[in-house]
Length: 432
Ligand code: ADP
Image (cartoon, rainbow, N blue to C red; front, side, top):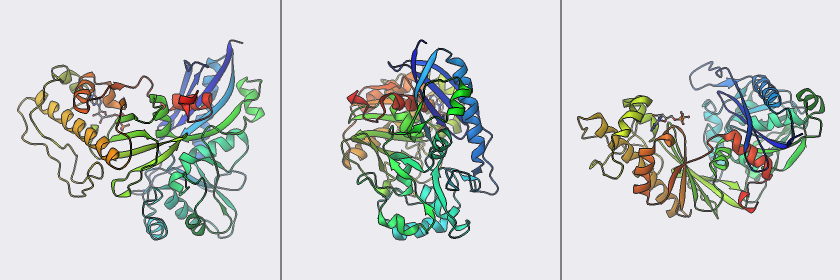
């Protein structure tokens, strides 16, 4: 054979992607399978049959295996959406559809959690996995044993035949205390008898070996280790190359999401700021309602590309925008009534875009300043991911406004981050 390979699998809502890398982190092959849209039986309700995920993972691994005829996979790591949750029987058979990350029906459960949880808990709110779990439990026959599993946990269970293990990152919004590495008493008190919370281990810890029948089918002869995974957004940060405190990753997608590695955790629920354990460090994050969705309201992606070419990133626009698609902001300003500021509007579309890009860049700078004020380090360099990362004019403008190196991340793919986690077996990547 030509040597070993390490595999990362990213399961998102639109599909499954897998990447194989060599021991130097070079991409050897990738594969992808689309998933059908989750069902939405009523407004605010989003669910999916977990068997569709499993089929997508199998199809993707089969494609990847075919693209790697001469490689022996060493280990596999899976990342997925932590706020997507399901209940299974003790041996991992789904008790019904999974509640998706954007399902908002668990309102009364979220209110009960608010009363029980410490104010700063990331498990508060109807989209956190804990509220979803309580909702699923409420519809499950009392006293019947069941397991609570995140999307990645369940896939790992299917890959190994060993169900009931999760990781620090996926378990954060289920209420797991990643600082003291235990389930807090207030969480256990909310869970009725018979329902088992997952055992939580470090991302990258070994969980089991790949099921022998499946390994055979894929043509892999040596045992393949399946390791504990992480969340999709943490995997994207690993992929983007964040390694040390001060390394930041800005996601310029529909919304503006900031993440920075810090020596200590920072939590400020008023701003929606919480921290994931990341090796020996912490990944602190906050999300603004500003972002690409505002650009898309006024411009197509092609217009953004062509108009950006005519903008001089060194020259200030002279306008002071706070771009939002509607009133209300959480971070960097916690003001539910904050009004979008998008005037005066220049007659030239190029000048309007200039002011919008600059406004979002200023919110980014304000965001990192807010995180620093709350205890995170100031950013020393920023890797950008998401649709806006491909815009060199914007990158140059952000470099000027933020005053530190800003670049487009070389790897944007969460599956690549999961593959790096499989290779290093730990989030403490700088130690390797
Ligand atoms: P998400 O996954 O959050 O929906 P993406 O990462 O796919 O978002 O990014 C889409 C966003 O990127 C859109 O809101 C779009 O306006 C913005 N976008 C696309 N191309 C560019 C560009 N060249 N410059 C700036 N923004 C862009």
